[in-house]
Image (tube, rainbow, N blue to C red):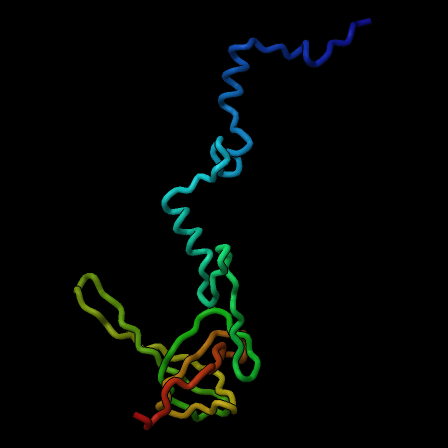
Length: 163
């Protein structure tokens, strides 16, 4: 019968080749973005991205650098997630709905000029706020409320007619 050979004897590698293999393999710390000294490697863009990640759009940064999201809630209890915009109410004819118009200025590099773009958004008008035509309002993005409504009026910033 053939004699069994231990795996150590079968895979004998000369010391020069073994040294090359050890140098080419990443160290434990290198797998996780750390140098051999244990300190994290931080490149220019990664540091900026990490810093931006700690500061959320609607959150605050804690002393240890972690972001805590603040939950925005409207008077009727809709949770606001996503865009928070300001605009002018141009129509309040539909029940519990307002049409908010935003004027966006966009730079056109070809002509070296700015152009105005109007954007109209339908928003839910809570009875507690009851925004009227001409009011400047703050609206927040929420879940789909109807076929065209996915914003809700959060606050009336300036009433129509008041100076």
